Length: 344
Image (cartoon, rainbow, N blue to C red):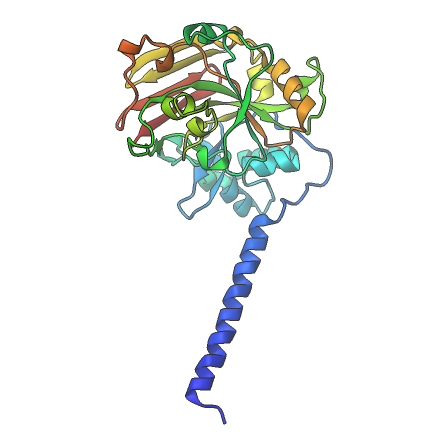
């Protein structure tokens, strides 16, 4: 005989089983690799891309065009076409061709008119959410090495950030309590975005593995980095949202020589850094060649390339006024756009 109690127990167990099954399915879907595109691995060409925070928890691809920003997700639905929905999917799949087809079709179709957005009204998402590797090169500008009183390194000094540090254009970086850290500093940097698997590549061939570039900021807590019992570059640079990137990914063909770009930082409107990537100690080709000797760089991996002189750490100690909540930072790199964020 089925009692009310036994019925509730049985149905409760069944429901719990279904929920557990659903959770396992969701977890499997999240971990499932992106499906490989059919055909050759194609790098993006002649595109400027951004990420759109859709408000439903997704951050999907947008294409900057003369008509406005093409919402790739919406355009694909309206036109019944397939296209990569994130920058990471595009890079890992090598599916630039399908994106090009969507852009061309949207430009000719009245159906896609609703997929063009006013960029000023877009909330930017993160360009990168789950890259395989975030590699950082430290002390990579001659004048910066001099201002902090360090010798120029013989090989690129490498460290890493983790995915929790990734953030987008117009984000707010939450500062930790003062007893954790308080010496906050800016570091505007060129970001290299890898487009093809690179292992033991030569300097002469290195740029052929680059998909494009972004403006980024290797935001830093100098006390955690340099004043702990031992030097801790990683911990001083990997707190939540300490790696804002954006607003754009610009394909390599539109940038040209990455080793001769103007780079600038402003704090509350005041210029703090203004120099050029021609002051690199190790240029883009040298960084890629060196890193790829030690491990394989994969599509979607990103490389922070160091910052020029003008950081707060390089000021005389009596003039070091560290960043604080409410400060607004702007990082800009020639051809790549202006990244803005605020401290909270």
